[in-house]
Length: 135
Image (cartoon, rainbow, N blue to C red; front, side, top):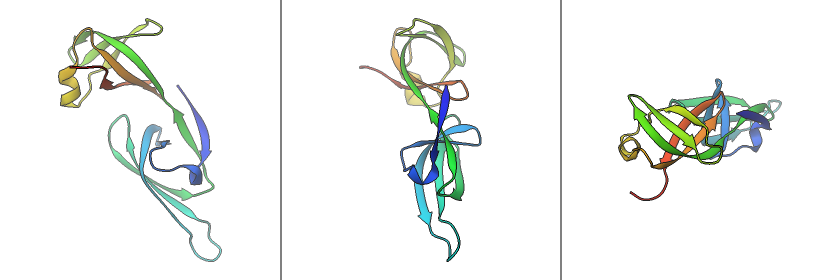
């Protein structure tokens, strides 16, 4: 659960960026040169991976920004209790609880024994992204 740094001008749609302490996926980005003595600005529109909220960010293109390092892992559902899912990592066999996904289609496919792909994002947030395999 770490992050690295990159220049804002190097990023493009599809990359990840930290905005307001949340990892976000860039969906739209535009660059504009401002005036004779101004520096070029970048306008970034991104979707938060945690809350799903749309976030915007405007800064000079040479600004160093945080880029989250997102671990994509595979786990098996052990149990579903209320609003959380108990997972076991398929590599380390660690067990932990993850919040139940909000997407109805994803939620309906979860049951004990199913393998899922989950992401570990800064600041230590776990999120189920998809169900692996058939069904």
